[in-house]
Length: 380
Image (cartoon, rainbow, N blue to C red; front, side, top):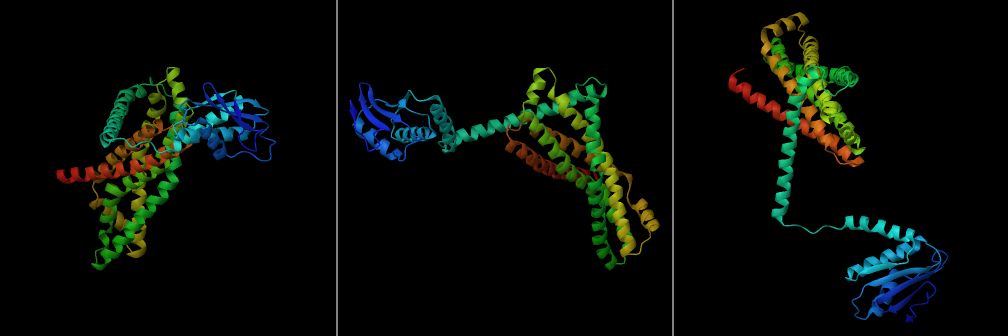
């Protein structure tokens, strides 16, 4: 039977039914000057239940309008009753009110801290993710070895126009920043070396220092850092955006290999351009050192180049050349791997680009350290 609930009796009432207590919402909540609070509604419902274990029914059949205020009240009552372990059922609620309540519940649920699982479970899940990541990386490298011959003979599912655009982007478009950075790096090395060597009257040996440092280390490393930040991040963001827009899934649906169509041209373009950029960067670095030698030590360019020819053998350029190839492969694979496995939202696109730069820089340093150990062991 109906029971009086509050001064807002035209807006709601509590009914005790055969199957439990019902909160009946009525009237026009949008035009009402004073609304019952959520705490008042919950208190009336709990008081009417009096130990009843049946679910509470929220009845909206008598509502005059489906105002958002109704959805707010229903949601608040629902959440507070659920904290008291009381089940809530809906009856006769307008579709718009029901939709707003349903939409609000998952958003609220995501903010709650999930129950902390056992550390063994977390360790197992983390190990499983690492194993899966290693397997995916191995698959990517295997696809690279398998698909490169197909690209060489023109049978890969890649467009020539895309490949040429990538060649321009990784090559000619990168020349300005490569020029500035490597010219200044060579000048800095020359200035630091000139200050120290001039103390011992050995300024002529500045060509040895700049030539070997640039050819063997700095030209390849600095160019790789530039390409990781400029090209690697671009590749990762592009592929992550395609993943978010389900374009990669569309390629799979029409029978096109995403690796051959997207990854292989990028891998090939960067692998081809990195050694060429290295040679260009090495020339600029040595040129920067030569300018400093002329200005600071009054060493003529002819004397500098003559000493450079005697001091820097071809093996130093070969080592730097091989490093540049390895760096190019690393940047291309890292950017494509992280881009194609990014989440499908804008935040994941940015995260993929950032992770690509970080992973590439760390990988470049690790590869350079491995080269240093191997060449030292071989006496090269």
